[in-house]
Every structure is written in structure tokens, then in C-alpha cells.
Image 1 (cartoon, helix red, strand yellow):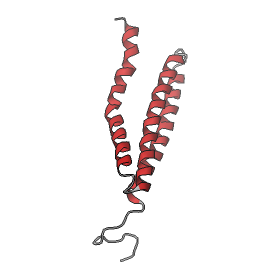
Image 2 (cartoon, helix red, strand yellow):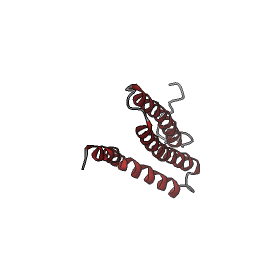
Image 3 (cartoon, one colour):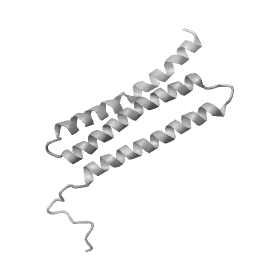
Image 4 (cartoon, helix red, strand yellow):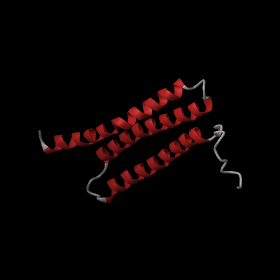
Amino acid sequence: MTASETAAWLPLISYIGLLPLILVWLAGGAMALTYWRVAPRASQLCLTSMLILLAWQLVAVGLNLLVSLSVDWSEPFHPALMHGVINGVGNLVTAAAYLLLLRAVFIGRQADQGAVDARKPC
């Protein structure tokens, strides 16, 4: 195997590390569908969050691969800039998905009877 053939496999090998995340997102989507009748709003937000995370990861993999294959490697900062932009957008998408997930967990829930309401002054 030549060095270029070996280098072509490195991005694919690095994406194997995403497998646990993808499994968690799929499990979260399955749980959201399972509890849809019990908590429809929370399930909808959770499912949307999981689908956003999964879809973005697939898009990011494709974009990073496209950048790696199509950039002019004679310009040293161009590939790094493109990957940085993709990662920056990915961070914004991930933050939005986590906000949906936090909203699903904490908004619209009934407080425990013995819990102190944090919104009321002491």
C-alpha cells in the first residue's frame, strides 16, 4: 500500500470514533418516538435535536471530505480556514440542538411537590 493510499483511509478511520455518538443519537430518537404519547412536546424537541445532530454530522463529514479533495494544497492557510469555518458552523448547529434538548428536559415539567421553587424569593 502506497503512502497516498494509506492517507486516503485516515479520514475514514477517524470517523469510526463517531459511531458511539451516532448510536446515542439514534437511541435518543427511538426513545423520543417511544414516549411521544406520554410527553409529545418534549419528545418532539428531543427528536428534532437528535435529527439535527445526526444530519449535521453527515453534512460535516461530506464537507470536510470535499474540502480535503478539492483544495489547492499549495496555499497553506486555505484548507485550515475552510475546515475552521465548517467546525465553527458545526459548533453553532450543535449548540442549537443542545438548546432544544435542554428545553425538552426542563421546560413545561411539573415541579416535585417537595422541591423549592427557584423563581420565588425566600
